[in-house]
Length: 116
Image (cartoon, rainbow, N blue to C red; front, side, top):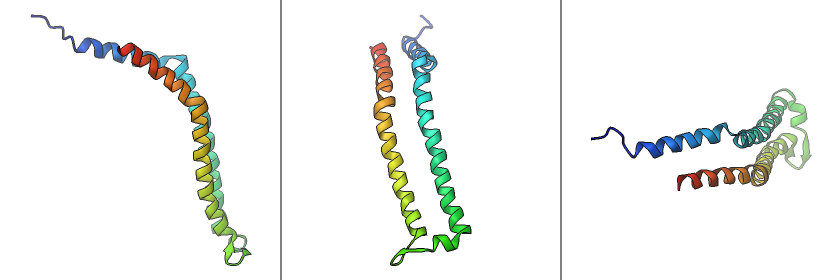
């Protein structure tokens, strides 16, 4: 009777392959590219949102300025928060299609090829 289990050998080699991919330059570049988009965009959105909140709290006269009819600056800034969220999502989608997905697909294909 043997103490070796055949099921554990492929799992170990798969784990080793995943670790090798994680240590690869290609994967590091993928993470760097993702961070290069996400971190600056997060900071930009947070600053934009903070500006809206600060102006709403401390510049009530400016935010209450009527632009036309009952529409004031605060309402426009609030609606622009939604617009900026959709713009960021659209920009990320374009960025991912061009820079993230091709590399991730290549890495996935290499891993799936090793599983066969």
